[in-house]
Image 1: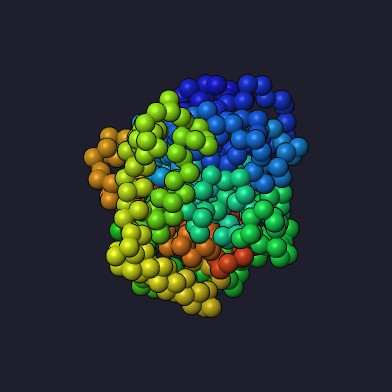
Image 2: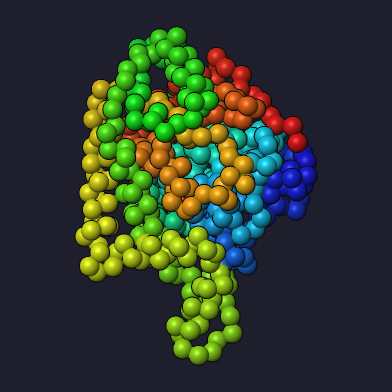
Length: 435
Ligand code: GLN
């Protein structure tokens, strides 16, 4: 295993474990998931020296099941789509080092795709941070139903949206590790206490499954991406699934609703980083506000500051009704729209991202709002809290493309069934980048 070299080339890890034992299965952990034996930075300078005194529930649950390799790089606090907001070096796409690996779970996807050994990445999504990098790096990425996996010990971005999920080259490994990490947790009151299936057994015929293809999800999508995704949908058709066009008319409101809700929650969550309890601090002098501003002014990067300000504004008295409360109403309508589709279809299939992995120079040219717009296909299902799976579906110009499968709440079984059928009939997922 050439972890050091992989890391030098790609910046996949923020913290790499010094010594790794031989094992059948390896784990990497996104750096916003607390580990008691490794520092946990959430990708931010603010927590550069934070050593949690506990393991997150998901970490507790994988201990002893394999070797943990280290903590993977991410946009600080999960704020980003391309990995370009990480305070500890910019992660690079292993398929082309001049391009983005996707964000915010950048390192998770890099390790899952570039490491030859069997490995599973623990990652997190608020608005697409598992699907996006999974599609840009050619691995499977599962974002479970909101609440299915305990969030206890996750450094919160936006509590009503955050989900811990998994990435791997082989979907069977994701199923195995899902079995370890699901299950109620009294420390996370939103965690699901009900029965769950054995995910390693969720495979079989897909004949007769109804797959909805939303026309709005192809509107601002690059031709090359569309072509590969359509090939994937044709494969499902040839395996006997019933493909039908559906419409998700509220798609155009999803971005605004998502960013208002996510940033409103983020701005309050980040208030706890005041230089007293966690991480970065400074010499105590002057008024509290002076101290607080000094620590936060130097600990938060530009994107974090932008989001704290926007989120605070959206919830301010006088504006709350116009932005935050309205966004919540739109969210409810979006959930209803997905529910209506799932009363007629088993699954929804669409492109994961509207573009191929972009070059870093191209990203630099974009305004923040243009970057946010890249999440157009992933924020809707994240707002709805439904499970989703990005599946490797081919390469265009040597760059990976992802097919996004979405299912109704707690229907991960269907995602595994269809994902495994695609896996049996394709070979893209087997490819490992040359580094
Ligand atoms: N790109 C989205 C954002 O910046 C999603 C991030 C995430 O899922 N953590 O909010």
